[in-house]
Length: 301
Image (cartoon, rainbow, N blue to C red; front, side):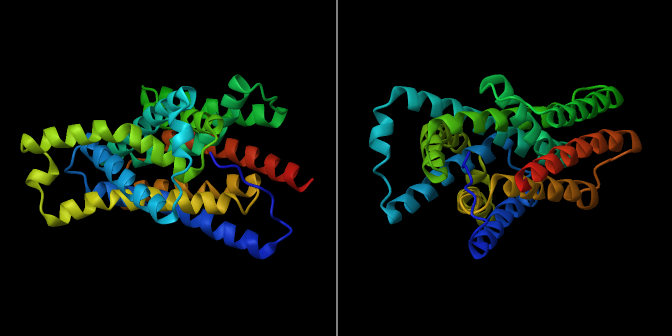
């Protein structure tokens, strides 16, 4: 994950960073509109296309920017390659579960995963990086855990989509933090690792006449090719924004994405949100309010 640096002394710089970060999270929040458009394409094939065309797009971009010098040292580092292979697996898992959830009408539960992700990051820091948690952070985690337990009891099942999305993205961020690669370089390496598998799968499905390339029209194919820039551009906006604003500000802006997803799920796709289920969300939103308020207070101190 990209670390932000404090630029509060330069208001214009910070405003630009806020704009970039907001655009990135708004784009991520609107992703359900795109994946719903591809509901008749299997989630596995969507991810294969997303992987392959993202790799093509970032490769063209790196070539235009003449930024390939980093690749040589990376390829000579088995440890770094292994770390990136694990992060690529986590990223593809996160993508696959998210696309499947959107296509199957679970946008609200998917949004829950990204609501609780910041608190999952705090717990991962405690477990793996030995970071000390403050009492208010423990309170926030307790409230979020109560929300998850409530949703499990009332629904009769774990909210597994939300938990898989939060854990996979949280551990992915932890792996990327140790890899020391920029956002663009990291995505390039991850898609380079995944692309051979995606290309073989797409070739097989096409040869069997079951892929969207074999059965879809030109419009369908264009939508699939669009997966490349739609994946890379928000990531670049995020990286540009994160360099210009504080981590506290970035932490508050990140709630734009799951909020937009939640609103789409409830008001556009009419997914159920009964009173009992809403209680679980309120507990989790309360946890985020406590966590964010404490982070903002400490930042201003």
